[in-house]
Image (cartoon, rainbow, N blue to C red):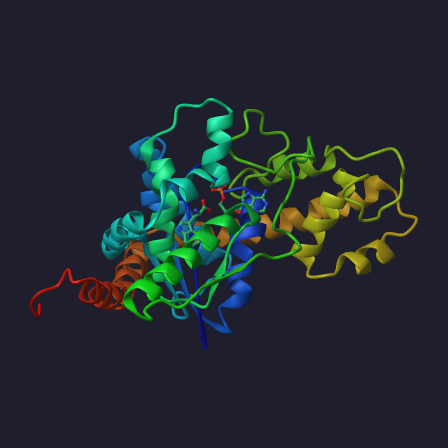
Amino acid sequence: MERMLSGVKPTGRITLGNYIGAIKPFVSYQDEHEMFIFIANLHSMTVYQEPKELRQNTKDLIALYIAAGLDPEKVTLFLQSDVMEHSQLGWYLTCLSGMGELSRMTQYKDKVAKNETIGTGIFVYPTLMAADILIYNPKYVPVGDDQKQHVELARDLAERFNKRYSETFTIPEPVVRKVGSRIMDLQNPEKKMSKSDKSDKGCIYILDDINISKKKIMSAVTDSEGSIRFDPKNKPGISNLLEIYSTLSGKSIAELENQYQGVGYGTFKKELADLVGDELAKIQARYNEIIQGDYIDQILHEGAKKAKLIAAKTLAKVERKMGITIYKR
Ligand code: AMP
Ligand code: TRP
């Protein structure tokens, strides 16, 4: 089985966008890949996290992954901070990178353009992400489209290292899903659904009250054309709802267009609201079981042990090749 790895930051409450774009896909990959999924808590430190909230968000995220169907027997689930080798390799990769290429990362560039105060962490974050990936030599890295550029940097750094010191790292491939990788805000479908939004009318939270979430679907912005077809440019609202429907039901967009031919927006929304409600209810029930006791602690403990075994091996190899190591440890 080919190895696959991804990380998710434990920041903020988990949205339907996160669920569709970053949680659900993993469940479908777990049978065909050797998967590693970690909570990128070191990355979350690039902006201040209130400690109590960070603890809760981290726990919720792990619980939600499992509630969504990830099987800890199949997938190695762990906290980034539990495998310190990430940071150490991150430093070597920072030294291998240039100011120029890091300045070209869009996440950083956007902040510069908006004149925001920028912590140093934001600037070097992509090299830590490269280390997260390369230390496990995965073939595939599933990410949202906003993260593709970072995986490309990881590829560049891997190639640079391999060329300088000899073949060491696998060159990873980003995997960006076409459907569901950009769920839009329900009130403003030109914009990505995001937890960092001030108003949350357009954003559904996985652990929120189910009736509130259904209402948010019912009041989603659409258009006045009255036909249910996928056309993100001219019909961003309906297209977004179709995308949500498709990823949750497993039906293709074409199938849904067919099914809803001649049907009004109200009926369509009502059926989607029920679908979303049922999915949330299922997840929330499992979440409530998982969050009890020390089940999560055990999973994380086991996951870190497994991950560390591989990470330590890669790091030892890297340090040997670079001339850092001078004796057998
Ligand atoms: P973030 O919430 O921005 O930290 O993103 C965490 C993960 O969820 C990343 O893989 C994102 O690409 C994914 N994600 C966040 N928002 C959305 C969205 N609206 N649609 C699809 N994926 C998303
Ligand atoms: N930067 C990613 C995000 O913001 C999270 C992340 C950190 C990640 N390390 C990673 C994703 C390694 C994939 C692989 O969503």
